Length: 146
Image (cartoon, rainbow, N blue to C red):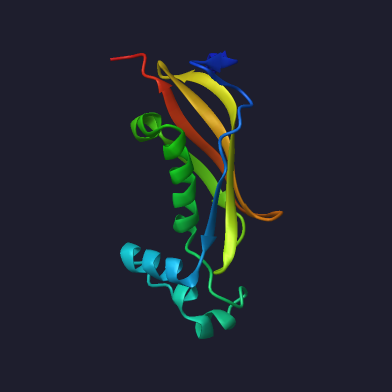
C-alpha cells in the first residue's frame, strides 16, 4: 500500500535527529532488570555460566536495550509514543555489563497510515562502533480519524 508522504509535519522534518540517550549498564542494573522482568536466564546474572558461552561474560537482556529506545521516544513525545508507538527492531550484538550504550534516532519518513500521520525513525543502539540494536520506531504525529 502506498502511503502519502510529507517532508514535514508540525515542526518535525524528515532527517531531524532526536536527542541522543547514553546509558551505562552495570551488573547491578542488569540484576535489577532481571528481577523485575522475571527473566531468569543465567547468561545475564551468573559470570561463571556466562564464561562458558560464546559471550564469555554476562550480557544485558535484549529487552533492557529496547527499553532505552522506548525511553528516548518517550522523551521526544510522551503522547505521540504512548498513543501510537510501534517498534520493528533486530538485536544484532550483545550489550555487556560495564558498557555505555548510545541510543540514536532520526526521522526517516513522515507519512499517513490508516488516516493518521506518523513519523518513522531509524533507531540504533551502539557501543562505540559496534551495533547492538537496529530498526525503526514509529510515533503518532496527528490522529486524523475518529
